[in-house]
Structure formats: C-alpha cells, structure tokens
Amino acid sequence: MNHLSLIIKREYLTKVRNKSFIVMTILSPLIMIALIAVVAYLSQINNNKHRTIAVLDESGLVSDVFTKTNNISYEILSGISLDDAIDQVKAKEEYGLLYIPNNSEIEFISDHIKFYSEDSPSLSIISDLESKLENKLTDVKLQLDGVDLEKIRMSRTNISISQESFTGETSSKIDNILKLSFGGISGYLLFMFIIIYGNMIMRSVIEEKTSRIIEIIISSVKPIQLMMGKIIGTSLAGITQFAIWVVLGGLATLILSSMFGINLTELQSSQHEVMQQAMQNSGNVNEMQLAIAAFYNLPITNLIVAFMCFFIGGYLLYSSFYAAIGAAVDNETDTQQFIMPILMPLILAVYVGVFTVIEDPHGTVSTIFSFIPLTSPVVMLMRIPFGVPIWQQLVSLMLLVGTFMFTVWFAAKIYRVGILMYGKKPSYKDLYKWLKY
Image 1: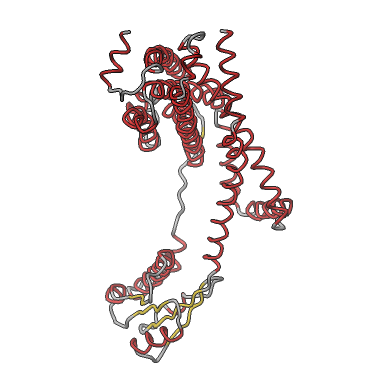
Image 2: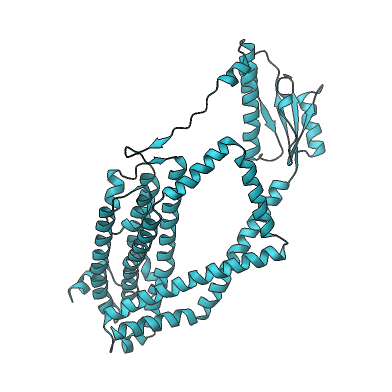
C-alpha cells in the first residue's frame, strides 16, 4: 500500500507539473469564455441587422398585420404590378418581397403566397411571416363564414393538468424538465471526464512503455499497484484541473465584465425588476411557484451522494480499460481497435438515457440498463431524479463496484504482460492468451 501512495503522488505531481497541463489549465477557461463571447457578439450582430421587407398585398386582407420591429421594417406597396415590385425591391437592395395574390377564395390565396429574395431567406423570418398570415387569413375565413371571432376568443380555455402521485405528492412539467436537466448534465460530465482523462491514463502508460522506464518501475512495484496508482493519480489531477477551471472561469468573467463595462450588480437588479414585473402576472406567479416547488421536490441529498458514487465508480471502471489498452499497444494508432468496443456501452447508455428514460424512467428498458455496470453510471443517474428506490440504487452500485474489482483484476493481467511486450500489434486473441498467464 505504501508503494500505491507513492505511485499516486508521482502520477499526480507529474501531471500537474507538466507544461502542457499547466498551459491548458490556464488557457482552457479563457478560450471557452472567449468563444462564448465571440459567438454572443456575432449573434448580436446578426440579430441587430436591420432588414426591409416589401409587401405587395393585392388581396388587401393582410396588410395590417405587418408592424415594424427593431430588426424588420415593412414597406407596403400598392398600385404596382408584381414584376415592377420585384424590380423596385432589387433596385433598393431590400431583403425581399412578400407577394399575396388577390382571389375570392382564401384557400387559393394561402396556396399562392410567395416570397421573392436574392438569397435564401432566414428560416425564422419565413416562419414568422407564415404565422402572421395563417392567423390573419384564418380570422378572415371565419368572418366570411359568419363566425363571431370575439365569441371564439372568449370561449378559448387554457388547460394546465396538475400532476399528483397516488401518495399525494404533487409535481408538474417543470419537475420533469429539472430532472431531465440533472440527468443529462451528469451523463455528459461523466462521458467527457472518461474520454479526456481515460485517454490521459492510456497515453501515460504508452509513454512509459515506449521509453522503457516501465521496466525499471515494475522491478519494485506490482503491476496492479502501478495501474491503480496511475488511475487514481490522474483522477486527482483531473479534479484539480476542474477546480482551477471553476476559479479561473469566475475570475475571467469578472475581469471581462469590468473590461467591457458590464455591471453585474446592475444586471442582477435588472433581473430582479424583471422578476417583480413577471410576478405581477398571476400566470407567471404560478409558473415560478411551480419551478421553486419543483426544485425543492428534488431529492438533493440523494442526487449528490448518488452522483459522487456513480461518477467515481463509472470513471474507475472505464479507466481500468484504458490502462489495459495502453499496456497492450506501443502507440496510439494501435489503440483504435480497442477503444471503440469500450466506448460503445457508454454511448449506448447516453442514447438509452435520452430516448428511454425521458419517456419511461421506470420502464423495463430503463431499469435493466440502470443495473448493467457498463451503462448504470449514466442511466441510473438519469433515473434517480424521478424517484428510484434506495435498494435499487444500492444494488446497482454494488454491481458497479463488483464489476470494477473484476475489471481491475482482468485489466491487471493484461497490464502485467502487455507493459513488457514490444514490437507487435496485439490482437484480441493475444489478449485472451495473456489472461491465462
């Protein structure tokens, strides 16, 4: 055990003192914030672009629905032919021309509306125009049929179905959104952590193997201790890097906000004013109350404990596979044939979580995959917010831990032989032989 602690310390210090690790630890949050700022700036430029749309309404039925907005203004044309209108729009280099023909049949009008433009128009603009025209022409058609629109508007009823379990626990659609958000974020973090730091473990083993340093280390350390030391040491380095990213991200946000004159206090106060204005609306009050209630209905303690247990267990399980792969090959090019079979269960877990847990968190498929150790770290974390019995969580966790211990033994046997094998690209048949040594 003393050797294990020394190996963990060595792996940790080697990783955190590496120049590339230090550079990426510092630059990653800055690059991420810069990318977000650039995307936000470019989106703002695109949204602030002013467009002028000419409208030729020969029917005279829909001209009144086009009102000027911050980004779009409408030019209503009249007493002009379609060809002349197109020439005029092209001459003025306006964004496009919306043409509504004249006919006694509403169906004919709706089927022959066209939008002329130099380039392909924005999908959001076309959708907005369609929505305006649909609503207006529907009202016109109802009026022509002798229907009182005011009575229709007064007769409309909004339905919001209240949800309650047989035990009397209330919930809402917002509850499901929060639960799905937690599950999705948890699965994404685990997936990224495994890929990033699992590859780091694999590269570390390959580097020591190709430099023959491993031959010296293995003379005084058991292979399983060396493998576990690499896994745990790299994990601690990853946690350290994440912690630094959080701190640097917060500092960078404050610095950038001060550089660009963004007052966070004013933003908070403006958000508070918006909240107060929204609270004046009874519908918004109800939604906010439901959101607050949904947050408090979440099993926070259970989620935190389960997240830590399944996150660590899932990472250690897959990391042992990465360490075994690193020991079996001589370079990263040869790892591709082994990585894909390992990642397939993790990818499957994400798909099961997204397409099955969302629809039926307690169904047969969701339940089975939440017990399979290779998929349970993701699927179980997505099920827990919906209320999973503690005994199921414990059984799933015990299966995960047991599989991890078996995987460590399995990987250690490959690791024990593979770290001293050079010059040959291993096959699955070779790995099977190594297990018998």
